[in-house]
Amino acid sequence: MNRRNFFTGAATAVAAASVSRVAMAALPEPVLQSNADTAAPLTPPNGRPYHPVVTLNGWTTPWRMNAGVKEFHLVAEPVVREVAPGFFVNMWGYNGQSPGPTIEVVEGDQVRIFVTNRLPEATTIHWHGQRLPNGMDGVGGLNQPHIPPGKTFVYEFTARRPGTFMYHPHSDEMVQMAMGMMGLWITHPKGRHPLIADVQRDYAFLLAAYAVEPGAMTPRINEMTDFNIWTFNSRAFPSITPLVANQGDKVRIRVGNLTMTNHPIHLHGHEFEVTGTDGGPVPKSARWPEVTTDVAVGQMRQIELIADEPGDWALHCHKSHHTMGAMGHNVPTMIGVDHRGLVGKIQKIVPDYMLMGERGMGDMGAMEMPLPDNTFPMMTGQGPYGNIEMGGMFTSFKVRKGLGANDYGDPGWFAQPRGTQAYAWQGAPLEAQAPRPTPPGQAPGAPSVRKPAAGHGPAHH
Ligand SMILES: [Cu+2]
Image (cartoon, rainbow, N blue to C red; front, top):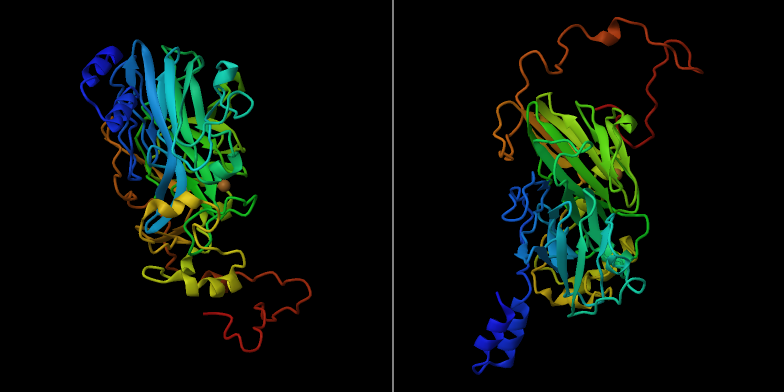
């Protein structure tokens, strides 16, 4: 659209509101997402081709080509994320969700990103890991003025280095990252690259943690260490989409950590290599096989493997308290409840409990959404053989024979071939067959169970 034509056309009696709408039309339409589903990979609609990534429970934003420049529009704004079924959290994000949309470009692309601030306070965006002019690096006060509420700033640079990156604010960072402001950025190589393999599946997610009191909906943004909601892309198990692969596929998984602690990410059933970081591809001579890789705070790790073992394989953080949903299992239902009489009672258990909107997040209260039954499952997820008893940073890697190249749908549960599954022993009780060693300090033959304390009922069920 030509700007001059716009104003010529608009010159015939326009109201002030229309002028403002016309001015906004000069920006690329921000592409919004309101649900937390995993979007199909975005085949590049224009520009140079690449093999797109799949953002777990997220999406890649389309762009506008404008005289050879890829234009994007990110709108920083309050959002509501369904972190797990029935568990909603007030967050700040981009284009309707937290995390914001993934930006995918090709090495050498010139990009222009319009960033509109619809938050109640100033923000900026830092393009983590990018080579760019200093004034585009997004540190408020250092590289640029902070973006005031209601204003739009423009970032322009060339995506010089292929790799796995992320974006997040560098303005009231503690609050804004604790509220979920983050997104992925993938720069694909412009051609064959000696250190970047062709893959059939390319997944990406960010590790994010929140501190949400039972019954509350807004994260406690001053928390330093005691987070209780552990997420991949702001979703907690059992709500994280499984990663699906056709047997034999080469698979890349890109993980970035914007929490305040490290996460050893562990994959079952396969070995992988770390093939890249946010610093770029890892030289082949520096790669070694792993089944767990630690992703430290502010780091990104890009792993690759051959999906050659069919099955449903766990993919999770190895810190066991990060695969739990904390505290939420006994949260009372709040639908239709007048909170005012409850605060005092809740504060006896949770001394710093406050209603949402009373923490200085003034504008959050203006969102006019009904207070949901904010229950977060602590250990949940029904599997084919019972409760999986996980929450938080856990999902599955589902390898199947004969999946189509673009089939990312959940194939359901894996049916273990006969004779390949752990089974219940049906023979004689094994305890009776071998004498057990006597624990030190105990007479041989003495019962080895601890005596139950009075009044606590039987020690054995
Ligand atoms: Cu962890």
